[in-house]
Image (cartoon, helix red, strand yellow):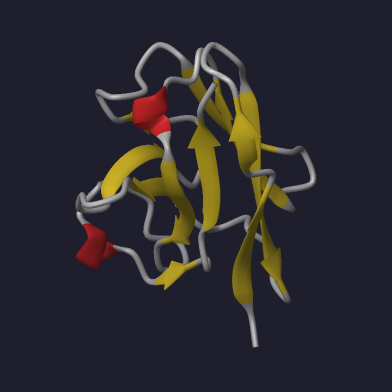
Length: 126
């Protein structure tokens, strides 16, 4: 059984940076368009970032544009999301997700995503 597993969350102070990781347990992530979503307390889940397969096109949500970077490692084993200048409004549960194999385009439409991780908590608080 393959699944996506997030790591790297936790408590950070405003202004700090954080890098989230996501690995495919039981499968490689090459061939998949991958994304990050988040759900803040009391709010709907929103798209944060996406990277296509083949790699080369990325997309960011307005809330993190200019202060985040999505990437994968050279071995195509891990997906990353670096978030800079974190603010309290970045608090939430962050999910990584994968589209179907070789479905290349980026979208924040949740119904287009096939597999989801369990989510990991990020809390920004002084």
